[in-house]
Length: 467
Image (tube, rainbow, N blue to C red; front, side, top):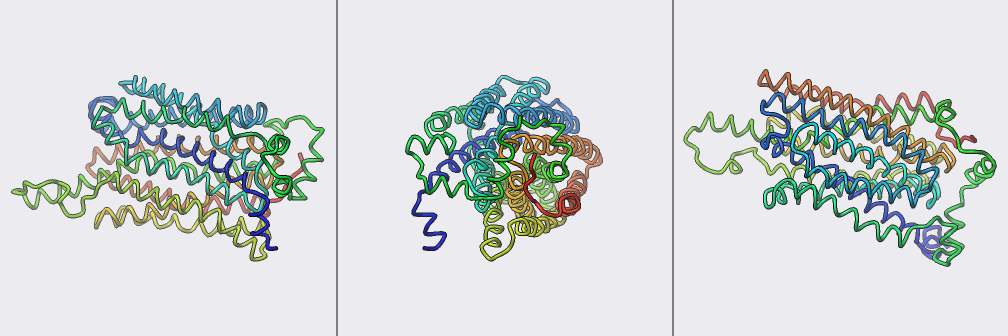
């Protein structure tokens, strides 16, 4: 019997768990994306001030409130989830971020929005530490990158759904209802989570998991030996974790690449709207008698559809990112080498975004294409960099290390948010905001190769350590 047919015969309950995590991550990004999609609507409503240049800076302040709270939350969430367990930790996090998302409807100026944005960041921080810990509990190493790619694609699905529904909710009922309705979705997920999730040992005991699938989940001999060596030891402190190069490799990888995703998440709609506005301005200057719809002007696109396209492509990137190292492993490559080689490949594709501004001047869809490729590469990279934590650390430390790296990524996000705010304010005043975006695209495109090189220098092989 082949390994794949054996895999089918003993059950696939672990994929039900992966589906739950996928759904939570989808909701996470649905709630997170609402702000960026309504940036112009909120600006027009005076939430970020009256002056256009100040609006860019005030918007970046609100983004930073989220990022700062997210950084603190990630550091705390990983530790808390390692302490209270995956089931409670995930549930408490989702309850918190659902109410925080709804709370945005009651903020009508920069600092009240900043408060609710900080509340959202603090509570949403639990998603990835809990998800990564659940994947480590439910999947062997050979399947973790693929499972991570699947659940991480939920980030893209959330980002696809959001532009297709949020602007229309805002137009029909007001922007407040966009926050209320998307925030309420998460509360539905809780019923399924409490009904379906338990650790593999508990599922085995109650008869919902076969012995064969349980044994397959725990089939990594090196990991089992490390777990047995750790079984009598207390939880590992942050300070102890920070003594390992493996922690710093993950820290640096997230610090350098997460900000790219944050930048596109919060500024992509604004960039595409700006591209449309510039094409309209140029066309009307050349055709002052034009009286048709702006959407009919050459080069103008439906920016919500453009955003949806970017994240649709990214979803496939996430799944492919999990599949490729699995394919390398099945071809006989060592798991550590397969992971690192796949990450190198994915680090090359974001370079396409270097051409986004120049191509966007020709046709906005060309800019969408380059950004879509870069975001797909990020999703593929993300599926693998998350998996390096469970490759290198025992399960009892996975959420903590994930939180440390996530905190680093959020700090990087704070820096790029402030840089974007200052840079775009400056070039808005100069009437050349596209130059500001071009500079930011250079930073985004080169981040992954730099991160890969630094991670390789710190940890030539992703091998399990004994704490």
